[in-house]
Length: 148
Image 1 (tube, rainbow, N blue to C red):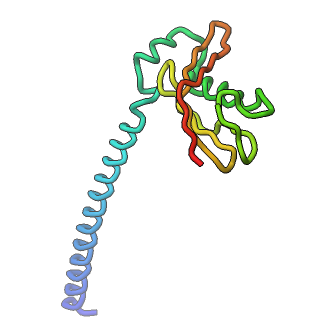
Image 2 (image 1 turned 90 degrees about the horizontal axis):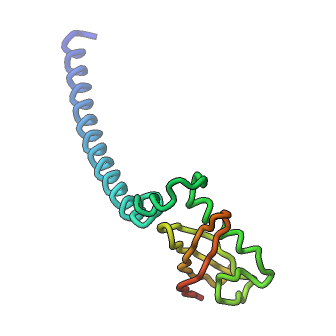
Image 3 (image 1 turned 135 degrees about the vertical axis):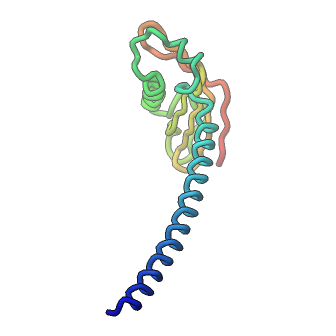
């Protein structure tokens, strides 16, 4: 290979690398913008959560429950097995089996929102809760909606 041909090929390779580098920088900028957008959306979504509510967390200061949200969610899911006719917190009778709570989101130190279904129909509950000194939890349904 002669020097001139090597010089031209090297120049072409450098130009191709500059173009690829520019494209990669543009892609990186788009990904950074997307990540920023997702981070903001996630922060907005988690605004109503026990983990992000310092006042609600202060309410539980000094108790020996390491993860209050998990504790409350587990206790709430346990209510699915309290009654053979379905969960007593759900004021609807299932048409495709018993109504059971599926998903739980602890909003703060007093309220939980839940999703429930019988496999065909589904709905949501707003539940008030209170953790007693003996670590039992009292639940009261304060609002509900059924979609079918």
